Length: 406
Ligand code: PLP
Image (cartoon, rainbow, N blue to C red):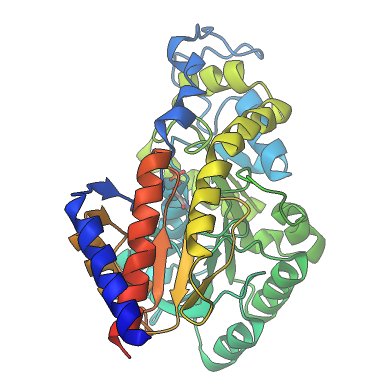
């Protein structure tokens, strides 16, 4: 029976190869149909003055115009006084927050301390790892469980290590696993981090806060939770419009406890006189308020959902004996875990068949996936026909690589 299966996989491989596919499944970016729904931004008339009378064409208001700060605050369930509007990238704001702690800190600059460490949920977002690596911060991986991080491992690391400066995590539709952290998990993280040190930072990257495409688990707004626990002075929450309107053309938002907020604002003031208030005004005209943003996100969900369903249908053909994935209900990724150490081989096979997949290891600090088993798939950018082909290639490659180890 094995021989027959091997034969049929071989002929399948040959048939797929003869198609000469050229498909890129690596990019977690919106499809052009998604970008189209924000096209009114391209042609909008932007008033020269904000409703509160600020001339958006000029310098000033380094933290953003008040209406944009209020919009960010309402999305993050926070106060506008400690919410700022940055440029287009929330990653930049996170970088600046780390930089400000590194250079100045709330008590002692991190640069004057030895052996800096950070807790990193895995599989995770490669740019978080890269950012921490830039500062020479050691990354301590903690596995995700489906509803947040493994608390036993987390608490073990806190007990074992000194000078852990914080955790950087994506509480909703985590990239790439799709984890929605439960309130219990987030509360436990904050309680333990607070008990560990009053300088332990909670960096919540809410990149996919608004990006549900299927009914999703309820979650208390992270900022409210931080406040109720009294962890807000150690917490910062970020989100952006990169996958709401245009990549690199949206707005970014940060909320933080007062001391951290002031530290970030001070650091930013050395770099930039003020953000693009014209773009803030343009977004306010287009999206109006939180309601408007949520309505807009329904349009994204309706475009994205069928693509994820194509990917789910393809993956569901694979037996759980070969590998697993958790169906995300939002976000931009699917995280596949093979049972055997075949991630590198699968990606190589896909490449041979003309399908590019994110390099194996990308979802781990220093590209080191200890089991060589995790693969990140990004279905949104492709046209449906290409996605179907790419998924067929992926599934075939998984089966071949799995069988090669028999
Ligand atoms: N954070 C996460 C978890 C992401 O997946 C992404 C984009 O892929 C970003 C941040 C980047 O966001 P921004 O464009 O606002 O910098």
